[in-house]
Length: 283
DNA sequence: CTCGACGCCTGGACGC
DNA sequence: TGCGTCCAGGCGTCGA
Image 1 (cartoon, rainbow, N blue to C red):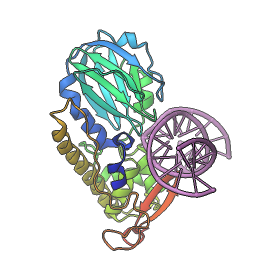
Image 2 (cartoon, rainbow, N blue to C red; image 1 turned 60 degrees about the vertical axis):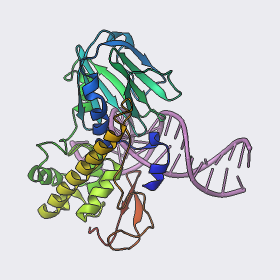
Image 3 (cartoon, rainbow, N blue to C red; image 1 turned 45 degrees about the vertical axis):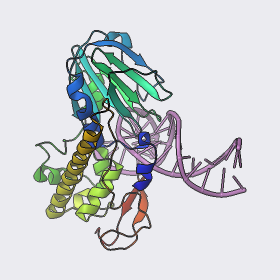
């Protein structure tokens, strides 16, 4: 994790907590703003879905989050933003010239919302409404919010019983629960003592309960930590600091487990790196 | 239907 | 120094 903390903030992988903290960093300040200009840079993951000009004169009614999507409610539609794996968003009174990796500006009377994304896996998509096909294509299959009221142990276990795939893949797929990316999936499974390769349907109710609790715990702690990071940045013009909990297993291959000292193992699952402790995490 | 593989994109690490 | 190669990954898409 230190490697990430010492490298460029822009290469930090935004998972749900980072997106939520980003939202918190500007949601209040942009509410009610009138859009005066919208500008695209290089192509992002998906096309905007409208001419930037058609965003002008709309009002920003509020900012919500669904999974890793930021949802800006506009007076005539919905603007979906995704940070991909290298994106960051700032909301600032000032509008400095766009840099090499600044690919979207939403200029309003209250400030400029800017997406900075070196790898351009991120996206900004406009949909006439949340129910519109262009929005539902992205939001329609998302699972429950892990920090919301509907993420409960009973339903979680029921959903897992229907999946034959490895539990880590199920978490990453986002169809049962959203927002758990590659880092927090490894971390939550470690906290729950579950081997990432264990098939979801094989998890007993008690183990499923432990995973449910671990997901809630790791994400809530990360949001809290991000919130405190945010406070430190609040005198700046809304830069959202990236942050991460100190990892127990992620990116620690070969290093001693912080619980049992056995070397952390790494493997590939579905083209993704997975880290686990073979002693602390049972199949 | 489910499941796994692929590709998009760039910067940093690393080898020669 | 400079170049080539590999790697990181969210998630839609495609093929089996």
